[in-house]
Image (tube, rainbow, N blue to C red):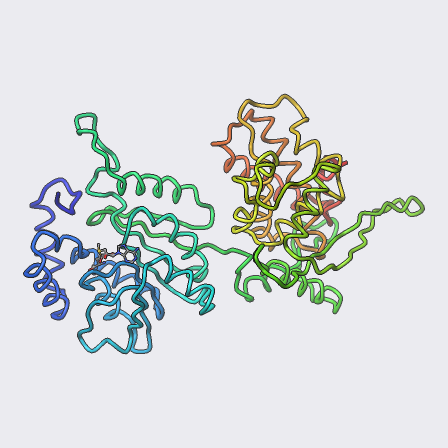
Length: 467
Ligand SMILES: C[S@@+](CC[C@H](N)C(=O)[O-])C[C@H]1O[C@@H](n2cnc3c(N)ncnc32)[C@H](O)[C@@H]1O
C-alpha cells in the first residue's frame, strides 16, 4: 500500500517533485536515501517529504522550542524537527536512533517505551505543560493513551500531531473493500472519533501523506497559565445594575485571597494514591431567616483523597455501606468504571469537591438528578457522576465570565447541573447528544449572566431550579 491518499500517483509525484524534493534539506535527503537503501519497502515508515516540510513549517510558525516525538525509526521526522527548531530548542524522543547534521545538542534521547517515557516525564521530571509540540508516530493502538498524557505535557496552545490517521485510506472502506482484521486501523478509527468530540482541543485532520491530525490544546483552567486565569478572574464579571457593560474592578485583599485559593483548588490533581492530604473546602449552606439571606460557611479541611471519596459516597448514599474505593458500586452513581479516580483526570480534585458541595448543600436537587427523578426521562440517560466532572470542566473554561467570589464557582456548578438536566429532558436527549446539551447549557448560563438584573449567581433565573 502506498502512503498516499491523493487521486493519482502522478499527483503525488508532481507535489513531491515540484515542491518538496527541491526544498529538502541535504541531510534529510541523505537520511531518506540511506533508509530506502537499508530498509527497502519498510522505508515507507518514515514520514513523506511533504509531510516533514509541513511539520517544519508549523514548528517555525509556532516558534516552537521544546518538542517531543514518539516513534523514531531512522529519525527522518526527528531530524526535520530538529532542523526547524532554533539553536536553543530541544526535541525529546523515546527511542535512540541517529544523530546527524550537527543538531545533537537540540536532541534529548530517551530510549524507552512511549507510555513509560511519557509517564516518567510527567511524574519524575515534572514536565507538565512544558512542550510546544508533540509528534506521535508509533504504535497506533496506544495513540489514545498517549493523548491523555500528552494533553498534560503539551502547553495550552501547543500542538499534538498524530501521524497515519487515515491509515492508507482504510479508515473509510468502500463497500467493495474486503473486510480484513486490522487492529491499527480500528484503533485509529476510534481515535479519530474520539478527537472529533474532545472538547479539550481544536483539531484538524489534514489529508496529507497518510493523514496527519493536528490537535491544539485549548485553555484548561486546571492547568491554565497564570495570565489567563488572572485575566479571567481579575476581570470579575460584576455588572452594575442597568448596564450591559462588564466592568473590571480591582480586587480587594479578601477577593485576592479567594482568588488565590480558587486557583489553588483548580490546580490540584486527583491522586488517590497520594499519602499526604489534599486541601478540601467543605461549604455549609445556612439560611438566615432574620435577613432572609443565604450564607455559606466555609471550612477548609485537609482530606486524604480517599476520605473525600468516602465522604462523597456517604453523602450520595446515606446509610449504604461502601465496599471499597474500587468497587462495582460506583458504577451505579454513573462513574465509567469501578474506580472513580480515573474519571477525575479531566478536571482534578475540584470536581470531587463540587460533587460533595452539591450533595451536601442542595441534597434534594442532588438526589433528584442522581436518581433521575425529574420529568419524563429518556431511555438513554447520561451517567450522573461523569456528567458532574464534565460540568466542572465546562465551568473552569467559563471562569472569565463570572467569578464574583470563590464560592460562586461551587454555586454555579449546582445551577449548571440543574440547567443541564432540564435541557436534557426538554430535548429528550440520548447520551450521544451529551456534548450538545453541555453546549446549550453553557449558552443558557451565559445568556443569564448577561441579563440586566443578574449581578450575582443567586439572581440567575436558573438559580430557582435548586432546592
Ligand atoms: C512509523 S515509525 C516512525 C518513523 C519516523 N517518524 C520517521 O519519520 O522516521 C514507528 C516507530 O515507532 C516505534 N515504536 C513502536 N511502538 C513503540 C512504543 N511503544 N514506544 C516507542 N516507540 C515505538 C517503532 O519501533 C518504529 O521505529
